[in-house]
View 1 (cartoon, one colour):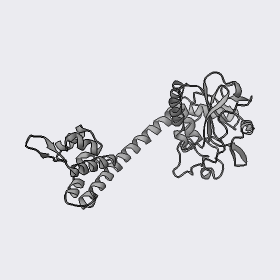
View 2 (view 1 turned 180 degrees about the vertical axis):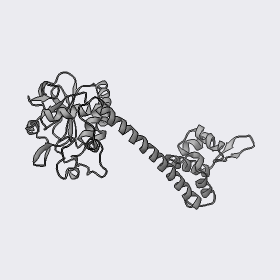
View 3 (view 1 turned 90 degrees about the vertical axis):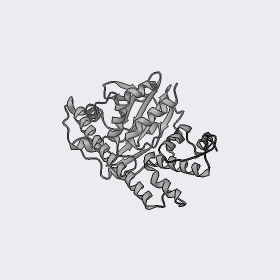
View 4 (view 1 turned 90 degrees about the horizontal axis):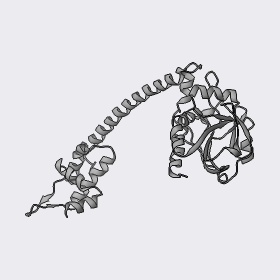
Length: 314
């Protein structure tokens, strides 16, 4: 078969086949007229190169696997040299992960310093703990508690915001409003409720808020007219969070969880308190247009909302 045929069969470009040939990984037969001639073995070899590349093994490092096939083994990784190739790729990934982790730690330190530079709240380890999600958190399951929300009108509730204004939920204004509801943000010097990390969907309010802070301008550019956080904590408690995290939007206070009662939103009990379950409402013309529930992981949620807004322009 010709080069275009083998490229099509293997799912690669003609340019890729020529590159493999230049590296000596694919060696077609030359016909008398000078044309390259390929067979099913070449399709298999090119397919193996493609598969190994997807695993992160550079094309230049696939030769031990291809030599294994050339030796008549049924699988390209049936040979000791192939196993060594896997180990080398894993070692390379480990080095890259370590380097990225070190860069992440430096960036986190810079973020921590910048977040407190103009704040009256002193930095400390508790803030770092709140801003980082522990590994192995339980993943919340969709229990269907929000299935009936799309299309519902928001109630005429007036909630106080951290910017000193009172916001009426049924009169948010033109355009889309994004309201992310969360249970409880941690606070320096204040312990979280006992067993907080074991409650699915509870941990992560600070990283979630930081995500909406970092993507605030992107959300507005994608069509959100306004962004609010909303929780059951009082406004003074929330103001400390807004100042410490330098949030560019207001947090609304609903200490009686009236919105949960009006819309039958899911809640849970922790530390002797009733709290909102984490969810996000996209509101348009006074009604729920879309709901995100359950939310996980919370530190990536703002990106999820941003993606939805971009896929559903007005």
